[in-house]
Image (cartoon, rainbow, N blue to C red; front, side, top):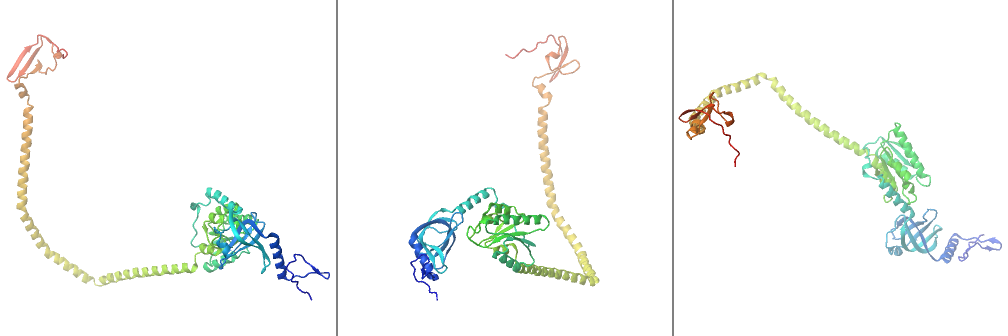
Length: 446
């Protein structure tokens, strides 16, 4: 019978009577933990936080990874120690954790029990994320003006993800439930690891080739489940981001959980918090759409019935009138007789009203004629005064004379007269015949 050893101080396998020492699992794990505690004591580890969670008990659990993602160690931080941290631990933060190495006996895993945590700056992956984000943002790849709207009722949707991904089942289930008529085309690719970016880009290239080749797509879903920053790193690859931005159809990004953010989310036309939400955003719920169509149909049917009722009433009224034309003619004859009876009285009243207005109109006419005659008289007197003022005879009466040559043409200049030439001067009371003895031009004014 083999008996489990209870010595917890030994760190190597012993032997009893030439046989290897057999350890109980609990004893071995405890021995290893004691050896680690004795060998390292309190230590400080520098690394990037990944997968930080806070339990309902208040304890914190996360993984510290090196900057290249080659090594990792699980960490536990109890509530009291976590309450002393002056910042909120987040994904990709580069921190320095102080604590003791231990073995978690329930799973036999190495862990660091952290009693102090301080920030050492953003992690290398997170710094790379920020640099690439700033570069692509400066190029305009994330501009809101580039975002394309989704069709309300797509016919064919492409899904770019892994065949083994739980996200694929979530998407297919949501699409089958909400829009079973939508054709789903799967473009499988790896969504994690070194080969993932190239495969994602290749799948998007196949989508574009099929789309331009006649297999038209209405939208594409790029998705995978949640994970740590390095697990989602394929969707922060520059090649993947550019391929999503260049996709010929609108792309919905459903990468990770609601708190996970990748550069693919910024390049996509629409970001969904989860893969299931991505499927719900792409395809409208068939039941709600059918209910809306039914409501529109009921409203249209109601309006048509209303219109038909109105037209039917009008038709009945017209038919009733046409059914008894003699009655309609009798009504018209009565109206005509009434108008014929009212016409003489109306004419008489109009003549009487006009006769009553004639004296007033006559008075106004006489007054207007008198006023107009007086105005004409005033105007005529004014014109007469002006004409009298311009009479040449009045000018001659003021001592002026009108000089003309023998032919009766007026003499307007001394240069027009020669010595010994006969001229005549017309005065107010007679005419003088004269002969020019000499012509003296007027000199310049002094």
